Structure formats: C-alpha cells, structure tokens
Image (cartoon, rainbow over all chains, first blue to last red; front, side, top):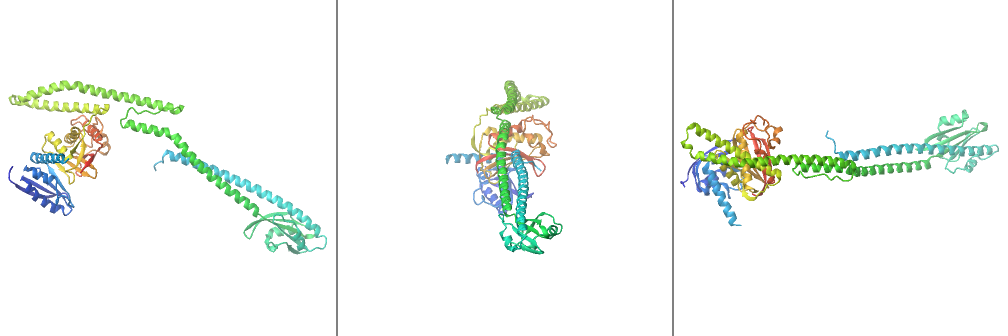
Length: 107
Length: 454
C-alpha cells in the first residue's frame, strides 16, 4: 500500500459541496478528509466525497468513510460517498466484507 | 363533480322517497282532517247558537233581566252570548263585548238582517262568531272558542311529524339493508376481479342460488377460466421455448468461447465479427434467462432464497459484475449500513437491468444511488435520456413494452422484459418500483424495499 499522498479539490455543484480526492488515501488521510467535510456539513450543507479518481484506498480509510463514527456521524448536513473506479470500489467492498464478518462474529 | 358511491345514492334515494311520500301524505291528512274538524265545529256551533237564539227570543217577549238571561244560556263549549236588544248591548262576559265582534260582521247582521258565521282572532286566539237577527230589530250573537279544536289539531300535527320522521328513519335503514343486499354481489365481483388482476388466476365467484346472479357469476367464471387457460398456455409456451433454446445456446456459447481463446490469431475483420457474435450470444442468453424467470413468476414457482445483506455492498457487487467501472455509486448519509432481506441473485439482477435500461434507452447512467429513511431503503438509477412521459410511467414496467418513451429510442435493443422483471423482483422483495424525472430532465428509476435496520 502506498503511503498517504492525496490531493483534494473542493468545488460547489448545484447545492452540494464536492470534495474530489485523487492520489492514495489511508486512514489518517480519511480522518483529515472527514474533519474537513464535517466543517462544511456542520453548517447544514450537503457534502459529497468523490472517490472516482482515486489511485488507491486503504481498507481502513474506506471503512472510516463508509461507517462514519462520532464525531462525523451526527451532523446537521449530510455527507454522501461517491465511489467509481476499481480502487475505491474494491476498498469499499473489502470494508463491507470485514464489517459483515465482524457482525457475524458478534452474533 | 364526482358521483357519490352507489351505496350512498341508494340509501339517499330510499330516504328521499320516504321523506317526500310521508310529507305529502302528512300534509294531505292534516289538511283534510282540519277542514273536516273545522266544518264540524262550525255546524255544531251554528246549531247551538240557533237553539240559544230561540231561547233568548222567547224570553225577550216579556220584561226580563237580559244579563241574567244570558248567564242562564247553556254554553257547554265555553261560548259567550251577546244580545242587541232595544238599541243596547248585553254580554255574558266582560272579555267578549260588542267591540270584540268584527264591525262589518256586526253591521251586516243588524242592518241587513243576515244570518252569518265568521271566524276572527280575539286576543291572539281564533274564534267563531255566529250572528242571528231576532224580531223587532234585536239580534243574538254567540262567540265560540277554537281552543279544543286547536289542541286536537296540534296533537294531530305532532303525530304526523313523528310518523314522517319514523318513516324516513325506517326507509334509511331499509336503504342500508337493500344496498348491502343489492351491492353485495357487486362488491364480491370487484374483490375477485382485483385478486385476478393481482395474479390470483384461480379465484372464482360463488355461483349461489339466486337465478339472475348465478347467470352473471357463471359467465364471469367462464370468462376468467378461459383467460387463465390462455395465460397458462402462453406461459407454458414461453417456458418450453426457453428450455429448448438453452441447449443450442450453451453449445453456441461454448463455441464462441473456444474461438475467443484463439482471438489473437485471427485477422482484424474476423476478430471484430467474433466480438459482435459474442455480444449477441450474451444478449441472447440474457433474453432466454429473462423469459425463463418470467415463466417462473407466471407459473408461481419462484423459489427465493432470502438473506440479510448490506444494500450498499450488494449494489456495488452488481456494478462490479457489469464490468463497467465508470458507473458511479453514491451512498447517502445513513444508507451505508442499511440492511435488507434479499434474494441476492435477483436483487443484483434488478440493479443490472436498471443500468442496462439506462444504457440502452437513457443515453447512459448518470449515477446509481442508495438512499434510506425510516424503514425503507431505495436503489436509484438516473440516466441522461429525455425521461419517460407521464403516460408511459406505469406501462414501462409491462412486459414487452416497446412504446416511444418520451423520445427514448424504443428499438434500441432489449425486448422489453428487463423492467418487467425489475417490477416482479421488487414485488417479490415486498417493495415497489417507479420512474420519475430528474432535475436535469433524465429518468430516475427508484426501487424501494423494506429495510431490516439502518
């Protein structure tokens, strides 16, 4: 897995603030990204994290973005996750598989 | 203005008819009874006044105290006598004196010597005055009250109103009973027709023992029977054809796969033809699979295997299986952990069919989304097409629907089974599907399913 090296482009699309991420995103990067998104969402705005152009996505990062815990969970605005392209899809599928396994293990 | 339900109209007709009839009869009865009673009262008053007048005339031939004479006159009905004697007025009561009598009536009796009867109102009460001329310019008057008669008429009026109200109430109850009895079979036919429309083709009407209804029920059942027979025959045909096509299709597919392993050794033109053939074989295989699946729904032999799945994971796997990395999935906040009870193969097919529909008829997929609120989860597929016209938004989910879809190319591939299967699968999962416009003018297909939890 590559080290976290990602760049972010933020722009408004209609009434949604789009965070377009490129590069390699790990868990630490995902935390920073969610902190940034939460700043916008705290203002009751809609945010979309767009992972279409990402080169690699850490499984932990995918889990963080997908199953957001506090303090990113309860925000006045909403954070939508957009996954396109193989790296982001595979990472999200792995995060779901891990989640499913844990759910089964917990009964 | 929308017409009220037949049941209410029937009840209203009964109640209205009863009201009209009872009011007419009551008015008629009251009018006749009143005329008769008043006439009878006037006749008896005239007779009594005649007798009393003769008595007074006889007594006046000799000197007499007229006031005492009047007091001695019989008045069993509470009447009051007055005498005009030698230019003076005498009355048996202070309440009813000369001035109580109507002036024209009084004048006609005294001056024209006419025997008269007249009704008039005194102190707010109806009275009858009888005037009889006596010899020597004298006259006898008697004023009769109508108190007793009015009491009788009041009682009669109350009785008639009560009877009319009771008739209306009775007719309303009768209307409810009759409407239930008459409309019961219609409601049953409606319920059975709804069941048949919902796919329960073996539903039939109970023929019963009513001759007219039995004829209707028999005709209805015969019609449904022939409809069922035809549908089952069509379904059997489709199923048999699909089964028969599977073997040659498998052989064809194997041959194409074998040729594809040697694709690198083929010249460009042959390789292109091979790709075209492989695409058509794959399309043909999907068509046969769709036909078989539809046949299973028709035959009622769909064996679903439900598991609890993350909807996001299932949709993502369906997109992966399509092999197109360009289709983006947007998972809304709160929808990432939504779980549904799903037959995975069939629900993945729903996603695949919606995406294929967007590609074939909608100019490509704009986005696939997952949304959730309360106890519902939704799969959303938006396309770039011109949308689906409101007239076609239900028909687009019918089998083999090939209509012009608001400018969408109707003949651009597909046979019109994909969306019909989406609708069948959505129903199988306890959900539903619909299509609406997007803000950008494309179509948004929405499959809504019950969520197990979020």
